[in-house]
Image 1 (cartoon, rainbow, N blue to C red):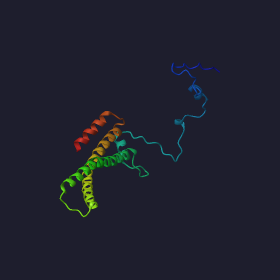
Image 2 (cartoon, rainbow, N blue to C red):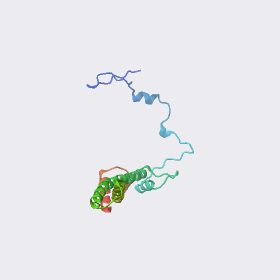
Image 3 (cartoon, rainbow, N blue to C red):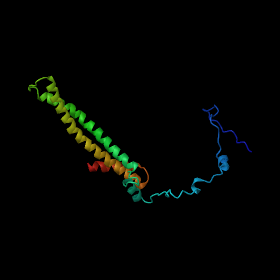
Image 4 (cartoon, one colour):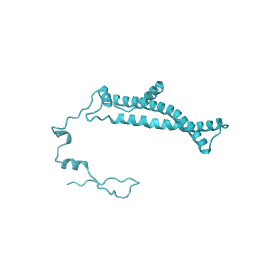
Length: 179
């Protein structure tokens, strides 16, 4: 049996390697089992189906499988839409909450309240109305934008079976033109 020559060491790595060296030629020759592609699948396992065209891949994206589950890509689109809605609600609602509360306090100087709690409660109700009103406006708009963007981008990636920068540009243009 021939002993393989020692591997050259790099300048920065002078210490011996803690892992043993394995040579691929020895492991392939010593492996008596046939390769995985030569083995036959059991009768109860169906043959794998690889869609041929872009339309087939796109159809698989939006159609439920045998267990009535949606595709992972579609789940990601749903999650992004919900996240965008929550973030948009906070983005539009928090400044509106502050503004509505200050505006109410400025406009209600002459009102008479029974006690301090009643005054704070009225100001808080006005602020909550502002939060809901403007939060909703930002929420649905950001959710629609993100949903259109992700749907177009994912559909292009699935149809063309590759990820490209042009898909992001097209999805962004489509999203902006839709709103």
